[in-house]
Length: 234
Ligand code: FES
Image 1 (cartoon, rainbow, N blue to C red):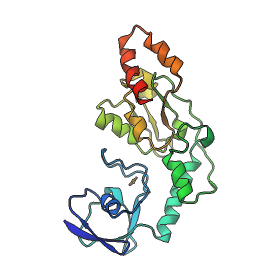
Image 2 (cartoon, rainbow, N blue to C red):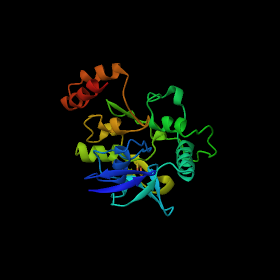
Image 3 (cartoon, rainbow, N blue to C red):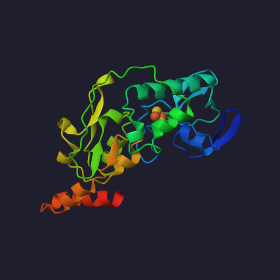
Image 4 (cartoon, helix red, strand yellow):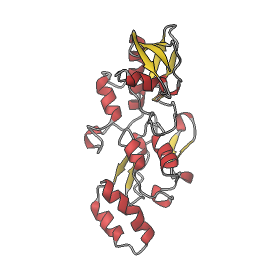
């Protein structure tokens, strides 16, 4: 138990596992992309960064709360950095928002509005990747991935499957099934938990119901087992 000062207000904490939870408890909405309370902490997006009284910046999702901490969540500097992070993510993102299933329910789109991103100054230097439509229930669009790693952790930590992983590093980093196979060629069971935690349209549920019916007629029961949860989720 302890007391922190957040934006000039004293806030008590007890067993909150990170500074972000204390901030949220105080009713302050700090943006996040890679934080999911039910998953392990990844600390990749840096959107949850806050500033202490000495001007030190740190990710609030990966910092343990300490008694006497003084932090600021929305300084001019933080707003500028968050806006730049979103702009950089959009720079490497397929921006066909009007055609995207996730439009209107996309965390990245929402953040762009919220932080006032009106233009993207950065050129997308990434090569366009093909859609992965190999699964009967899930479609992956690597061009919309923001590398938050939520899908990878959900698959491993909630479902115990590990159908997805992060391959390569730096600008080459990509979420993909092992050996760059299609999702339909992995142990994926079509539970859809990756889709629930994906903040963008990088993972969506198939809406082409004909394909689902075709597959339901497939005598291979393993395929049917993969499809059933997807029908429920959709
Ligand atoms: Fe903290 Fe992404 S939410 S780094």
